[in-house]
Length: 445
Image 1 (cartoon, rainbow, N blue to C red):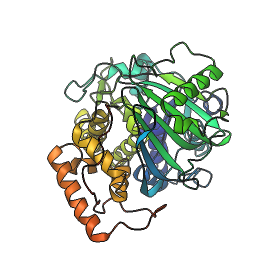
Image 2 (image 1 turned 120 degrees about the vertical axis):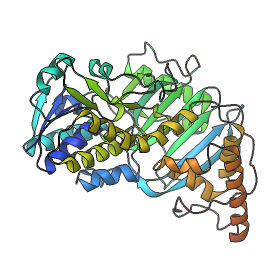
Image 3 (image 1 turned 180 degrees about the horizontal axis):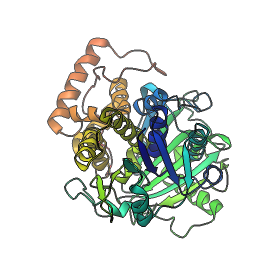
């Protein structure tokens, strides 16, 4: 029986620990908090998990909360005009529903499941010296703790890291009492509100420790009006500031938030980090090697909601590679090759996320404007959150975008406008009709 040490009990670490455990590996999982401390602590993230990532969980029988979690059928985009009305507003339908489960629920539940199934759960904050000491007892050491001293062991990869400073200031509030969007009152959907020159507000229906909730998530441009949460430590003041900014910059969202309250005292979070890609193998002082997992080695800004999705995809790639290795050593060459297999997926999420952090080029402005009137174009964009590689076909190159819109216009003409009102999900791979370049969007987000 092969022995594996997993340091970090987040989305990827627990996914890997439970997957290896199910295949007969002897797994030790290190966490700096107990399940109860996680469950009763502060929120750790926002998260929307799309079909591919959810399926990786289902494949291991880990979708424990599916029946309780809002089924997210769509993803909407709104763009603010200078007068704070909506210059663009549309809803794309997802081919398969997405979900958002508060990581306090999921991580605590998965940790308890791991222990109940006979796994060795060690509650201990792990330093580099600890990792070096323990590493000699294991065939493979996996580091999935994306913050703190351990991350510094993994060198920044300058060729794959575009930024050297945070690109957004982040502020999260989990709330009860948010009213539905009046134009789609029966559809649970992720809402992406783009405010040129200010940032983005995401609204995400979710399951939290107190049941059904919604996540209000500001991403503010550094130094801008939404970069205002430093020093705000009181949860009530944090929510009040969130709502004041919504009233000013996204009044259509504020209109349904006038009666909200925090889900709990731990339902707020603020901070910032630099998006970074790191080299996957860390050399330990005693000569051992550790393989970085998920956001230890690929940490993207959450503007595209790829964090939990990428973590699940990384865990699935690594699990397959470990199982395929059999009794062969987990040497450095194998570690690097395993990461490169993951990078072939992760590079698409990184490229797309980084593109959305800058001002949108004119062809992207045309694309977002056209999607307002063209349901299949909206659907294709929405389903790209599940499979960012699809953006390679039409998003980055102006000529490819224009060719796509031209094909889409022909398809719309051939098919007719279709019925008005709420629509059934449309497969993401369907040709997306378009009827011209669409309205110009104001400024840049």
